[in-house]
Image 1: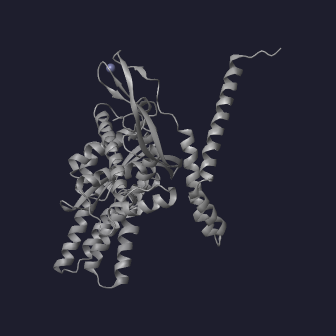
Image 2 (image 1 turned 30 degrees about the vertical axis):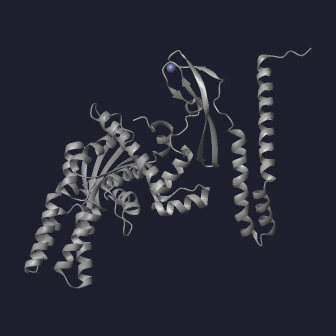
Image 3 (image 1 turned 60 degrees about the vertical axis):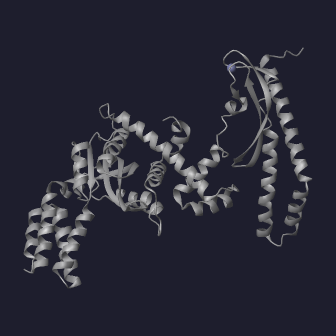
Length: 449
Ligand SMILES: [Zn+2]
């Protein structure tokens, strides 16, 4: 005797359900395969002269078959009989079916959605909208996700072409801009919430042995005020792998177009989120701009401040061009001052050597004074032998590449001019993606702020 358990029954039902789904897909695909459009495509594939010609038409075949599959699977309307109970307790009446088309990554689909109206409170609603969490616009989350990702990496006009070529989704460059900026605005509000959280508490547990904060500025061309500085911050974590060796784990970014005062809470929030107080040490690297050190003093007073070695070299080079004429002389002087003296901690020796290089001419004298002033002002931040003996970074390459990737690559291509509010949304979108927070955004953060 067969004993049918409830588990078996469940399996049987789902098997029957599956069979029904299979049949409805087959029916819909058969309809498509027999359509005039499909006949035309099949002929073109058949007559295609080479693989590439056949491929072009195969892509079209894929689209119509995928759309047929989608159609056969998304038949639900949310219709629950002619009468339905409203949240207010009164009865609601079925009014009509509303049609709406959606762009999905698998093609366009038309959904029929039952509309009800409550006879008590007068409320209208479509049960399917709530059940399937249908978007307000015409694009699915998948389409928005791909679109914004493309918008973050390339000009909107290029994104339009890539989107169409790779996914078959046709959206105008202005729609791509709108989607990218609206996700950027959503990320902006998440940042606001994170700033709020960071103002209350002590720094959380650090996530690594060594944390480093970087800050720098770079210009973008705005419609309202021409070239304006974007301030960029990066927070990096390192693990110790040897006496003089560190491994870079993760770097996250923040970027803001505007005053230092408004950038400050953003940099702090990012440091706070990452636990920017390393168990072993916290570093703050900068190029020598006064606003950067003021930020460091105020936000991370416990951090070891480090002047970017390459900026220091650049300044020595700048002076050499004014003091010397012979290229070989310049090169050997710069190498002596930087590699042999400053990098080895012989700061006073370097200052003496720079002073003695002055030719007595006015511009040479000025160059010497400026360089000596720069070194004296940053004296506490150029203890390179000690830093290097522990494997700490002495160059701010991380922030320079951040400026290039987050601001330069997307916001400074030739002829680009941005509205101030538009560029800020895009900066936040691009920073989030480069911080590897994109998945986190779609899984947990979206529309929660
Ligand atoms: Zn009601």
